[in-house]
Length: 110
Image 1 (cartoon, rainbow, N blue to C red):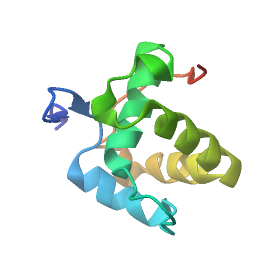
Image 2 (cartoon, rainbow, N blue to C red):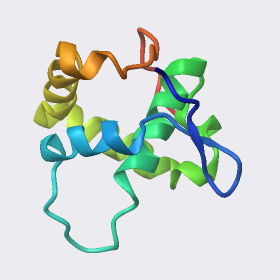
Image 3 (tube, rainbow, N blue to C red):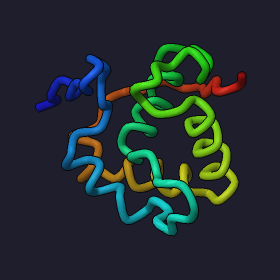
């Protein structure tokens, strides 16, 4: 059964359930350097928001994290192949029963 997205404090949606996020966590980079890291689940939700709505990352609410973080995380993870690994894992039948359609294109430009 697909559950409604959980709402953030500022009434925005988190597009991954806690269970889904925990399944994807092993595929996320985890070497933190410098400034405190913005929560990956929030940032991924912001990126999904941009994909789903067809909007630019600058149109995403600040509740998803700094807009530059959305862009940087998307680009850096794309370069490292993180998105490919996440999508490969998310397409497994054991994960797909929880999956929600997101969209087909990414428009994270400024």
